[in-house]
Amino acid sequence: MYLSFKLFKFLFCTLLLINSTLCYDPSQRRLHNSVIIEDRLLIFSGYGYADTLTYSFDLFYLDLSKSFGNDNLTWTLIPKGSVPIYTYDSTAVLSLDNSTIFLIGGFMRNKNTLDYDYSNLVYSYNYPASTWSTPVLSGDVVPPRQGMRGVIDNSGIIYMFGGTNITNLTTFEGTIHNDMNTFNTVSNTWSTLNIPGNLPSICYEYTVNILPNGIIVYIGGVESAKFTLVNMNQIKLFDTHKLEWSRMNTIGDEIDPRIYFSSVLTPDGNIIIFGGCTKNRSSVSPKLAILDTNKNPFEWSIPSNSEANSPPSVWGHTANLYYDYMIITFGFEIDTKSYSPSSQVHLYNIKSNEWVTTFSAPDNKSTTPSTDDPIITSSHEGRPLKALEIVLWIGLGATFLVSCILITKIIVRRIRQRPSIILEISGSDQKL
Image (cartoon, rainbow, N blue to C red; front, side, top):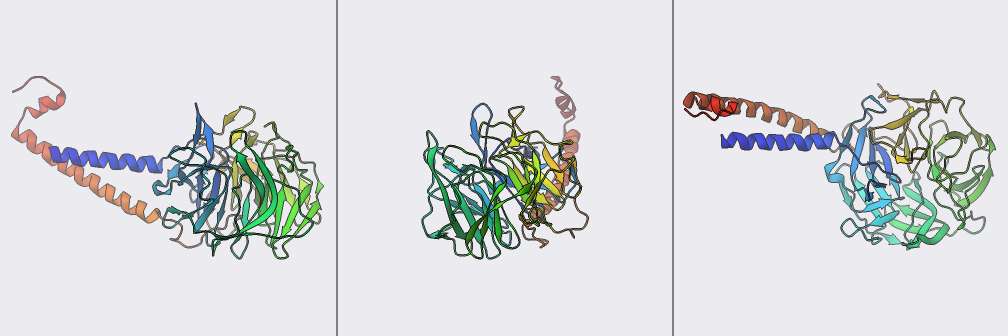
């Protein structure tokens, strides 16, 4: 009987572990990171408030190969994927082959002491192996940065503009930059570009997208130490081929200045922005707008039905594009002054230009995915847990079946040998 109890205990604990992994309930958060690898939307880092300030280091994902309702989600924890440091307001960029996530900058804290820790400015996550590491860096020395965003070009160079270097971590005061730094993901080398003339103003908390022609588009953010918001009609452009800055005055609808908002680039050349707030954390209008980069100059427009069934005003969220859907995750809701629930995402269909409540997994993936988040086409790369999950479930099923048979045999044998076992199981104090 002792052996059967040990076997049952092992089975119960194993099933509990699997259930906690595959039915994960993540904490609410803002200023986190999200990327899409193959058919998984991965979420990590960020911070939130419950009773006290809490930081997040878990790595979990939403399976985009299955259809779901936007308020009926199943998150899955990657047990070995815990980020080695607490960080928020950082940037995360995928390598060209989507095998590696580069997590750069932000407000970094040691997980053990909670002290600010900038001993490593870059962490890399090997997705197939599910391991984090700290690359050995070379080249120019780049101070710690927060509030900047990075994009990668076709040669594997990550471009990061501006940001803040907070030196007083009590008053959160520091230096705002307007330099352009690059990180070579092949050689792990930093370079600070020497660009003469025509430099943009200092800036942070903007959004960034890189067009197929190598032009990087910077929208919004803060452009002065006095917290002046950038005019949304004044777009910063950086040519990655010529290494030159330029500016463009856009046309079209009026868009409120904002920070802590999101943007995605669609395959047909539209940049969709969503959410954000003012410097006083109040809402902005419109919540959603589209910048057409096919026109010269670029043109802003507000889809006529983009307010119908729209999400709450939110900031500090993330947005990712997967085929026809822009997926909004987490963040802080302005009107309710509360965090977006972890049980819900917001879905915007870029083809019909409307908010929807149901995500339909594509039957065939012929549609071109987002240029921001390229998708792995291999059937096995980027899915480090899939084969393990299948084998584990088969093993658990077999173990459970064998356990049931063994326990049944033992109970039957004990009943035959000692009839009083029936009274003992029933809870009777009577002994024969």
